[in-house]
Length: 554
Image (cartoon, one colour):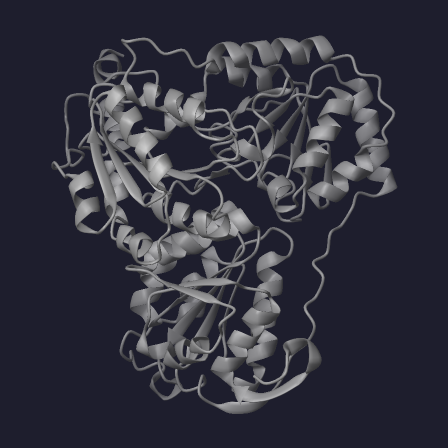
């Protein structure tokens, strides 16, 4: 490519090279993949693309989690490549996570030769149909000349409205074809704002309320509206809650922050929502977890739902007013409201309740999980970025860690296991200057442990904490709730994760006391090399609030 993309509208190149040109126009700097022969022309085109770093993973699931974590951190589309049916199905867990988490991703999948379609060719799957339920759009490029058009549309769709994943299927016979390719300028992403009528309606509702509450979600993060939310909440003294696994949407140490709506939430935190008479749901789809199995709201509460997606408005709860708007534009428009607040004392009381139940105090009798969170709070810079896998171990993080700055948390609202460590690799590539720490259970960590070698090969220095209790703890908890004493399929074997880390070229430590953890953690912070700290934990303390015996007795 002798001329820059900015200077040309047409290039006589292959369809594979057109994909790379589109990546350049989108200013994509990292792509993730597991290589496959079905898209070799794209890999060859990437050879000359010095502006893009290609991260080759050990498993497509790991690659897709890395791309998703990278996208969540950069707020730009994550890009991942894989081959045909086998690679596509492996990476589908990351696609599903991106779909539920509203994360922009563009996924390029090799496809069998067009002449072999419909014959159950080698590794053939109808990728458009397979991914349709968990993507915003899935398309197969059958005409090489249309590659720029469809790839550019894929990026537009991934970023527009409620962000999400898009699949582009690439038949292997299309990629090497040369055509005169036409590239259009990238389209500005629409950012709708509330109408004057809607603003007046919000003003009317706020003037009638006594206990308003903001529930802020990923739409605030995607719109980069954290500062606007802070200013809006402060101006009107409205308390703020974070929706499920959006902890860093609002400073947790702020006087108006009143909690996180996730799994195992303290009932006193939930009482804040029940006392509220007006909910402002901002950039959240009001998911099953956020709404505590769709049970949190009642008919007494009025709802203002503000979201970038029309389909989200009214999908779960019918709002008093639904506003189709970008979160930042909505907050800026609402900042001029004339409101006489009557809820300052209530907001102060609910903050006091939050502080009481989330205050981090550790004693010698507390389990090591809680001590570890205390050490993270004590030793980590406030701009450190934490990721977590799915599992009960995360309850201690969610209950006691204080996220004080934006872009400091990445977690799967999809609840996908195996997510934490690969997502941390993506986050570290997005923010190489930040300290990045992943938290995983032994069950989830083992699912993508092979990506430690990827971290070593590309020198991605994260700190991976593995809480090892030799079981699938969350499932065991539910098992004991419904079938006490009848343990089946949830016990796991003993694995030396520290030893495995060393064999793969990382630093590894195994600890069973907080003193040992602190020593290993300080070394990891100092050495800035990929490090795994395996924390041996008790089986009995199954969650933050319950032991196995407690559950059996109940």
